[in-house]
Amino acid sequence: MPHPTTATTTAGQVTGIDDERLVHNSVYLDDKLYAHEQRTLLGRVWNFVAHDTDIPQVGDYLTVQVAGNPVLVIRDESGRVNGFYNVCRHRGAQVLEGAGQCSVMRCPYHWWTYDLNGELKGIPGSPAYENTGFVKEKFGLVPIRTESIFGLHFVCVDEKAPSLREFLGPRIIEVLGTPLETVPMEVIHKQEWAVPINWKLVAENQRDGYHVPFVHPIFRSASPASPYEIVDNGHAVQWTKLDYERLPEELKGSTEHALPGFEGGGGYIMTLFPDLICQVRNNYFMISSSVPEGIDRTVVTRRIFGVVGDDEAKRKIRMAAAEATALASYGDEDVPVLMRQRAGLANWTVPHSLIARGQPATEGTRGDDNRLRQWWQYWRDYVGATTNVSPFLEA
Ligand SMILES: [Fe+2]
Image 1 (tube, helix red, strand yellow):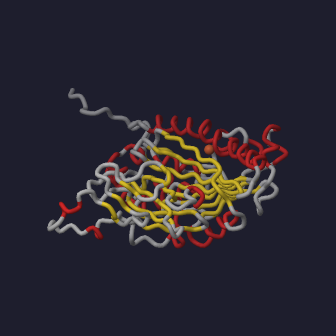
Image 2: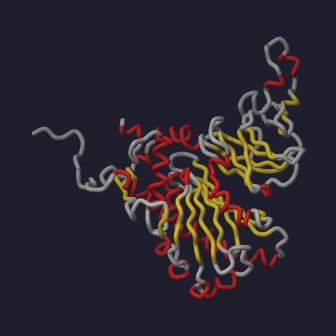
Image 3: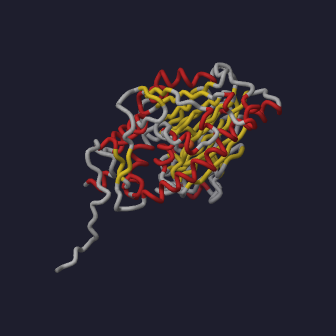
């Protein structure tokens, strides 16, 4: 009897559940899909890159990857924040690295120099370009669409995408205005994790309220399940509540100095499509952004915001709250389970995982998977898939 050429197993097949409540492992494992997502999804949405207080002075800059492209944002002499592709027009080297301050942008390779508006100003040995068709004015740094709201700067690769304000929509702008419009805020701490998992697992974790009482002991009894709203364009707002009475003793002191509008332990976790969180936990604001750096590597950056003018004591209290509920709780609690998830999904015998909790609705309570299904619905639209399977596998 001839042997089959590949192993046959049907043990992990799922039946009786709608496609939209299943996610196929291929979406986390397919290299072709990863490259496709950069162009069809991450290149077509608005990506948060910096807050005003990251680059407060003229010449302050920072660099970041956006949809697989090196990008820089820099403050010019007029105070405006400009975004450019961080690519020298000569031989393509990255002009700036990391973050810092400069009076001109100089590429380290052949010292081509650009001003803060991206115009090409200096070329060593420029007479050699005479009669070659080269025109200096046409070789400035290439700008990337940059738009801002409440001091938050976003960039978008797609020239045809709707504006940032249209992308966010009125409800998100309204919610984000408290606290960003009601009190001046500044970045007081920035922390990074390079997590060896696909970027979508990071994004899904942000919308998964079901894990909270199991993975995060602090919230087990101090954070009762609260309602959420699903908003257009893939965004959602999870309202949160901290029950001070039930907080562990050592954390109670860190809840003072609530931001205006969040007295009594209120807050929210706003998840913006595809992978940004804007969060308030009564006395601090946080933005968590992520940059995919390969199919299996995502760099997560969390910025903690305090109030401009805080004294050292107030800042310490906000940081203690953030450490317990957004920093240590992420690195020590979420990241290890996400790595376990990545390890389990890397198989070809149990091909699906489940996002089936709860009924279709635009509102719900933490623990339902409606927000996850909403996320995947937008994912399918952007990448052109009919189910939550890599379209390259479907073909
Ligand atoms: Fe978590």
